Amino acid sequence: NAGVMQNPRHLVRRRGQEARLRCSPMKGHSHVYWYRQLPEEGLKFMVYLQKENIIDESGMPKERFSAEFPKEGPSILRIQQVVRGDSAAYFCASQTSGGSTDTQYFGPGTRLTVL
Amino acid sequence: AQKITQTQPGMFVQEKEAVTLDCTYDTSDQSYGLFWYKQPSSGEMIFLIYQGSYDEQNATEGRYSLNFQKARKSANLVISASQLGDSAMYFCAMREGGNTGNQFYFGTGTSLTVIP
View 1: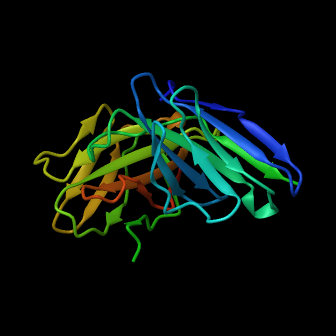
View 2: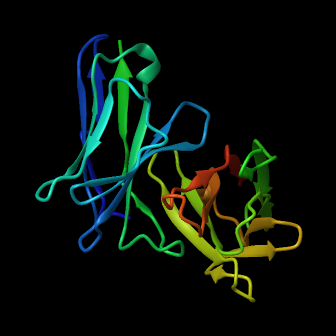
């Protein structure tokens, strides 16, 4: 799991600002997932992407949140006009393909604090 | 209904003893995968062990083993010979095999403390 990179590790934003979280999957992995972890809770699925495609965004809030995984470069999770309730740890995970037996390897997470 | 249920918010175990962390799951799929992850205080998620629904034998990885009881829909994690470094949060997760986007469903976690 050391191969999944996320930056920044910690991000502080004031209410109303934008937060941009980056994820570089493990080498050879073309499937990326974003999860959110609120304090004292498990991870909750947000969105599943392949290169240039959003496959499943059923866990993503309808407003202010967006995600992309361009042909080149990292996957980006963007939160516009952040509110205090957005404070959480955001984890990215990658896997080689979409198979149900594939293990997802997680990055170290980005801890977002909204003041 | 919850897809993954972990009923033990916190557990204590003496160093060098074995401990079982409970996990039950709910799915109507025939094909699915069960996973355990460890989250130490530093926050990263570390993959521990995987069990496929069609696997006939319980998965083992070093000191970790998965007690898979399909009929009861349980996938308990057993850690043998506990070490101080095992103190962490432990999450059980499931992926269903159908066209559901392959997302993981996570339980709420069990906090394990190893006592010297």
